[in-house]
Length: 291
Image (tube, rainbow, N blue to C red):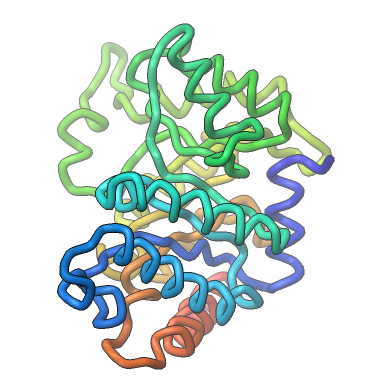
């Protein structure tokens, strides 16, 4: 089976797109999914969410590289939301399109192993890649790396996140002058190095926000074996020029994630078509920035 990076790069080449469309269900964000329409019944709301995003997936599948499902928004819908998460994940993967589960998991020992099996093996929540939190240390990452390598899946380790408050921790200066996020990046590179595939990239990627363009440029060099997942485009303020440095010389090595700016463009019934138009426009801007 091709590695996660190989599958992702194949999609980028096929679609000529570097967009990771984020699926963050906000039922109040559109009349067709609004809880008031269903008297607050969570099962009906979750079913409407599935229909909403199935329409968006159908409309955008030819113009995006992958999809990222944010676990928290599904969990907020309870058991019906988890069923919706499993269904949409299966629907996307059945189309041969990579799915990233944005769950930011992190734990130690057998708990980390259990999370890794849940999301990177063959279960109902299994995705092509998973976001993980490194702040419990290297031993908390190793079970995820082992499972990702075993199953040809991918990981995205939080390195430099897009939120303004991330700097409270990630920018702390260490002895010797490096910042904490740089230390985490070096840890990711050490974990990734032994597992490089034919593309030169390993299953161990990194999350680096579009809202930090200077850091993004430096981290592209510091993370030579890692695919970058770049959130923060659009609603959080990142633009095409900000993300250009995330890519390698072949225009590979990264995907740029956007959620609200693509999936909640309108209150109208043409939301799926509008999502496609927004994705095409976003990808065009990034392509132009790459030259």
